[in-house]
Length: 173
Length: 283
Image 1 (cartoon, chains in turn cyan, brown):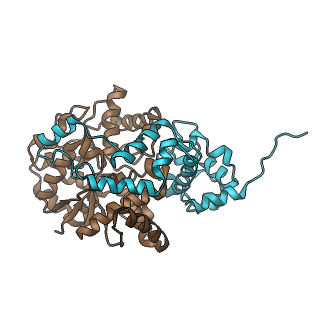
Image 2 (cartoon, one colour):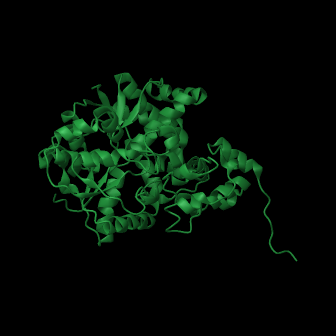
Image 3 (tube, each protein chain N blue to C red):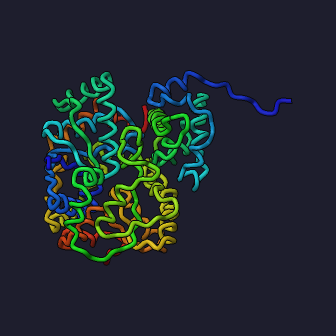
């Protein structure tokens, strides 16, 4: 009788995670200190230990499309407490980058990414912001890319060079 | 004291400009000269933007670092997110010559600038503690009410502590010390040091989950009889301020440390921009 069908590990995917910045992924011995420390896991079914295990075993299809991957607030509590020195946030970041390249990016995140791609900032400059800044004795338009068109062009060129504008326009290749 | 390049970021100048005016006034009165970084951009944010594409994240951060390098100054920021990105990218580029070469190639082609690894990235809480000192802060305090304060460090000011090396990440004290120097009492509350809930793109993607984390913290702060929340990050500030309005059951005023020091130093209230706070501040 077959109780469960075991999935085959895929070391190729694990290697990609290491290359993408998750270089300590293989050090994890699954103690669960991370999950026990996770403020997001207190509220949801997100278990950071399982994400790391899936990355270790190379279960790409379990990890990249998963919503769990996006419940980490990057608070670093697990990273600080890990007895094996696994740089868990770096692993999450590597996995998220890989997920986005596969097209797994939420609309809300796409909007944020498009805003920085277009304006160089994550928050818009509205007339009411300018008015309040003026009232507080600040320069109406902050002296950032908002006030320097040539500087904004530079930031846009970086987005083009990294393929970031296309990546977030289409949400993947 | 040395001049510092003042990195503005996004949330402070655009949603809580009172934090910016307070910071400028407070630093001036403590003898720290802040110089604007013309043409700087978003840091970019360590949670969301780093999640999407680390190469882009590093290249845009390197451009911001290069602007400060050209000014010949270290960077100071009042935001944990900006601090994390700029600190961490500077650290990576300083310690990995191959990576620096790769990022500098992108940077040079796009901007003509390169980053040569000479800029220190400072969080203003750490700068106040180490360079200005508690005595200098105390000497500026004009009195005022002493309140029970929940000091919220946030995540990216001290962590990851293996590279930041500022204070103990589990039992820090430097921010509490400054808040007490300003005449407040920093109270102990359950799970102090826990994330506000907003980071890592969670607020943008699953705001309900972020809010649950915020609610837990607010409950713990309330149990400890807290009268004011003091943060050192505009994103945590936004999460606590807007979050309380969404949750409806809490009304604890939220101050960024710059605003608290502004009040303690007796700055004009009009300069603190408290009227845009969603939870009314009547201190």
